[in-house]
Image 1 (spheres, rainbow, N blue to C red):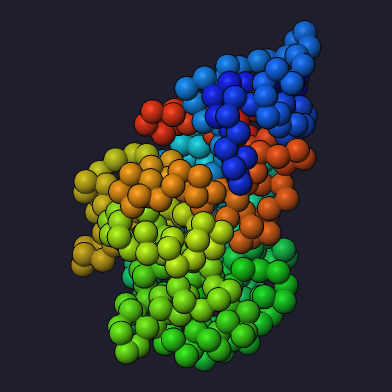
Image 2: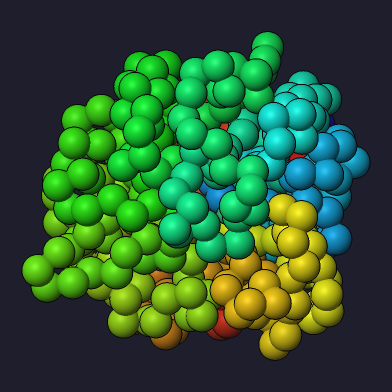
Length: 386
Ligand SMILES: [Zn+2]
């Protein structure tokens, strides 16, 4: 693979904009970022691209995505993950966590094994950074679209049966911290460098304080799948938004959350502590119709995914759209929006240092966005265009 040079346009490094600079990519990595494009010398054979009218930003990192293009992580196959990886790369997502949901121990194990295979073999699109287990240690009262009959009480035995020899690829676990046994497992996960996230939870403000002390530091799709804020009982969202240390993620499709609530999350936590996720399901990038999620029928109409009972069941969002939404509907500055889709989520799962920035030494994961409407013009993954 030869060298690639992007020049002209604007570069968002993950921290700041560089106008009229250049990026040198070599061997799948960012070799250098120049403040002025004339500082970057070209050699014969270099692939030099003029990105005038475009923004080069760090590729998006999705730490909560179940599926796309008719495939779901719970299909438990390499091919399903590869299809998802290819589909989301077309929308600028360059790495992601394969996200499982509440299912039997065997089905969960199979899904994790498939994710392990995709990490080892690589995909034809976005890279798999590991697994996010959303369930089965959740609160049935806040199950959302998770299958109630398969919810389990938190236990290390169940966790070990589900992860087997693939424990090292689990980067994130969503659980309900108020359920008996959840804090013990949280302490273990946190000690092992796994992001523990409160979700599908009925935790009170005080329970969230205790959860934080046990290593639960993130919140899964803030406001969705938890008690709402009440002025006398701020609940999980009130705790996560106001207690220091907590990080949050939002589904910025303007269906799961009103734009004002998206803005509120950003005002409370800042771009460093608020990540964009999709929670996307298999209908994503396919269209309206009848689908399945975690063993339940899902009807997608006008892009909104719901169970027959009406509960929202994931989304059909892509991260490029999420960025556009929080800029246009919530009035969040573009630099913050881009960071919330790249460096912030990468940092949450310990992948910062190689993902989420256009800086020397980082993986060459880049999305090219049209300056005018933020549509995706191309994505580079480890130095290769997709
Ligand atoms: Zn989810």
